Image (cartoon, rainbow over all chains, first blue to last red; front, side, top):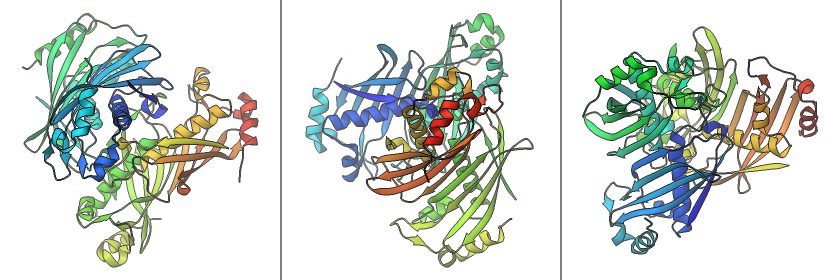
Length: 135
Length: 135
Length: 135
Length: 135
């Protein structure tokens, strides 16, 4: 189980004196890159291969507000995988309280713009993702 | 029908040379504030009343990438309303292409932290929202 | 005289309930791109040429705080020009009050990374900048 | 000597495929808050006292570009102190290369808006800052 830690920064707060909701989308990116690296796949290595991984969807449910200087712990897991797409899930905690649950969908694309089959082009990565699926 | 316009800024792009996906959540906020003002309700007036409107959920589907200096036109509409919550929908266009569809859920809270009934505290605003519902 | 307008967004504020100071650097970029376009030079056209214009220095003096939903008017002018570098000045107003004065230094580089002579490669642009110098 | 570490995030890069220059101002804030905490003064404690510390000036010289996933080490030191204002200096490194040098000026204010004397209101903090001055 992978857990990413993000310390809320002052510049991430807003006039309501809480973490601006758009920043959770950024925390998800940080956590996702950490999760993939923990699985043995560095995002920068895909880019060196000429492959990028655009976000095709995001969804967040905000349960409790957070603010500077809270420490958010983010559990990342795999929700589903198909040959061309995978969906990650995120559960964010401050202490033992869930503050946000979220998910993001991703595909893999050649820089020129066509979607590639993860199963075909990165079969080992596909296996790893499949092995990490949680309900 | 309310349409908000956002010009993608250079600082909103990322290493993939497209608009970073987290920024669409910010464009939604801009568009939402414009939509509410067009309905006759300025966000800053709610705040003067000691009322804030935290985002309780967001969801985005990214259809096509955008980048600097694209002009994004954002249609805002009401998806659903209950006495304590409303959900707005967003359709974002560059020229005639849909680049993103999204929604966001909101409640109204007293600054001290308890959720209020929009229907009871702001009955006229509740009527306006209800009148703007689209399928 | 070029004047750029930026409406402070809610997501640009912080816990102190004012515009976060880092955002003024972004407003300067917006204003600079608008100023160059008003001079007849679109930033995206330089990029199509394989030329980028990294920021080599920035400096800001914050005179008064601003917040959502203030309208900031930003006057942009040329402070100095040499064959390889130019410095722009910015004066930001809310109503008639100066809220920030700033400057930024820029060079032009080929994407491969070497600095080019603006005077030699873009002599007309160099002339325009020189003609816009203000004390 | 205090050293803060920031890992450049993907969302901090731009279309030029480097860290957007505005983000260094945010790294300075992170580093500054860490430095003050290392000196025994947590920023959140000042806020609990009803005291905020607005940034009155910033200045950055960008020496080399950085990008995701660079690790930036930021040395923070005190440049000057007066009873009502202090200036911090920052030297940012990637490996042994200086990528940015910067400074920021700060005052202390009561939330109601008047500047206070740091020397009078926080004499021990004033002593600590004075003791940290470096040429």
